[in-house]
Length: 278
Image 1 (cartoon, helix red, strand yellow):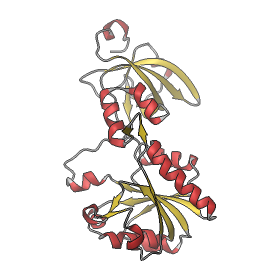
Image 2 (cartoon, rainbow, N blue to C red):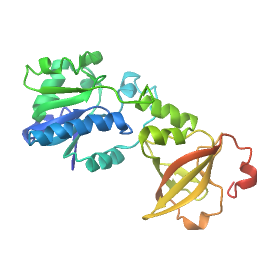
Image 3 (tube, rainbow, N blue to C red):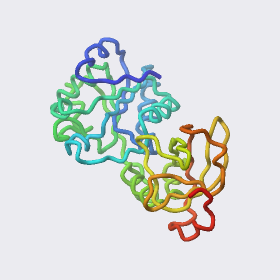
Image 4 (cartoon, rainbow, N blue to C red):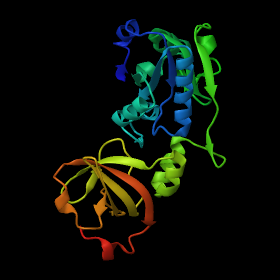
């Protein structure tokens, strides 16, 4: 899979090097089942028409631009992790559009002309709530008209879990509350974060969310090996601490993955009896 970072300066170049494709549109943070349905639907259309499969996402999140940098956005995964999952879903090209003030000001028709028709999109697939263009005036129902009928469109309806719409917002809420077991059912996979060892605790790499304070059952993945253990997230510290003495197993600044299973306790009541690090 090829990852292309698009902006107003290089858009024409990449447009000249594009080929007819089916494109899935969305921010796709966390790549939950709703996102997967959009991408898989696009993949089915691409296969049927013998076209390549592309995904277009945007970075940074629009909220950071709209707030003029005053709002801190909780990302669920970095672009590198998103790209890895997209590749596993059979995506051929991953376009990451730079979301800035210039992009924000594009009229819906301008976005379709420059970023979809300009990238040789013949069929666009998006969720029912996808919007584009200035003030989000464009939506999937008018995209075909905005393309002067040059792009076919498929709208994907909402995907729910026990009657509730699956969304990145809901996933953030579950992480914020520490409800990792329910999150695993919603995602149909465990939430994973990349961390590094600072000599005393694990620290998150950028663009991941730290769950609520408490004691968690996790699996640590390092160099292809997985070890189940427990970790603590104290209420006033931005770190992930081991509850067993495994310090000697990690090198300073070593990067690894933590796979979150479930929360054992929501408070630190039993922490002092079990922790061996702090």
